[in-house]
Amino acid sequence: MSFIVALIATLVAAGLARLQPGEPAIIPVAGPESQKCWSSLQSIDGCVLEIFRSFSSGKMVPIGPACCNAVIGVSDNCWPKMFPVEPSFPTMLKKYCHLAPVPSPSVRSVWRNAVTTRKHL
Image (tube, rainbow, N blue to C red; front, side, top):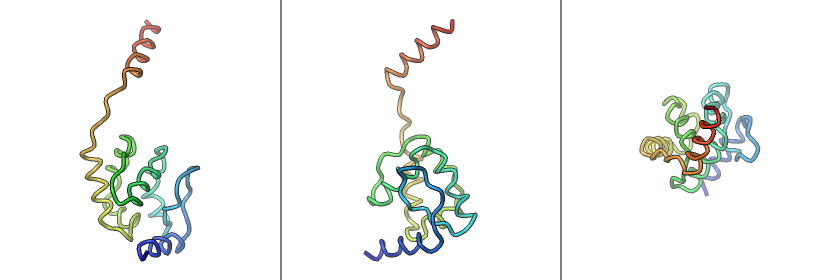
């Protein structure tokens, strides 16, 4: 309960950053620095939602490779601004993204690429 109160207090303190439709409102804006920290994750479709699912469940749920690349690229000094109420979460998130296997292409996508390439020959 105290975690939820702390999270809400953090969010309400300064307002919310621009959200993509369907993304949860978890992005506290303490100023331009905080917004800048979130911007690379917001630019990946669904990334903030994937991170929120892991954050809110307390365990890592699947996060896509594009989102993981963005997570790995976030500066270490940004994480305390992004998750001030749960400082251990960024470490868990980065560890997941460093260890997450890159999915192999599906048979359908390989076939589609082969057909597309053949059409251009």
